[in-house]
Length: 171
Image (tube, rainbow, N blue to C red; front, side):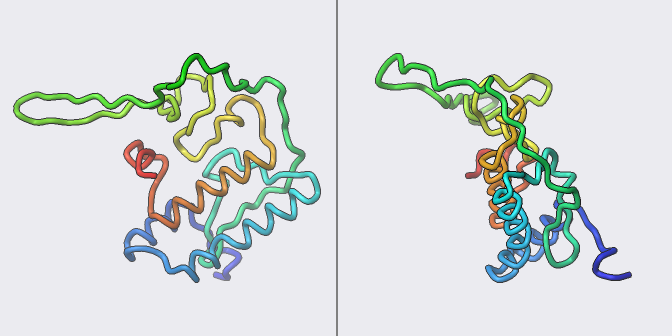
């Protein structure tokens, strides 16, 4: 089997990193830089990689790869605009304290975290499973892609799986 035949999922690499208690800076850069260069090359040609699912990202034993061709950006005019501020303070997160049987637990509810994949995204928010809210609303442009690539890098750098709810609160 050659290096070109070796192909594991993004999560396999993430599991390897967690099992070895982290990634070195040199390894991290070597793993992500070729994908970032490919994205930059596509953006310079007014194209995008269009990573719509984490299942499109693979690890070949050395670097992260995406095997699809670049495509034109999908831009929609239906993106929500920032609402007019109603007051000096806007509550965006709520922490609930639950007490039962002498055990206290806390639950965080945030307008900036969209955790229910069954319901549509209605406003700018972090979407679980390595997705971007703007793509969920019909737009995929270079800025969307930079955000998604940043999520991939944060995941590898910190050993966090953003498909798991508890890790979405970590950063």
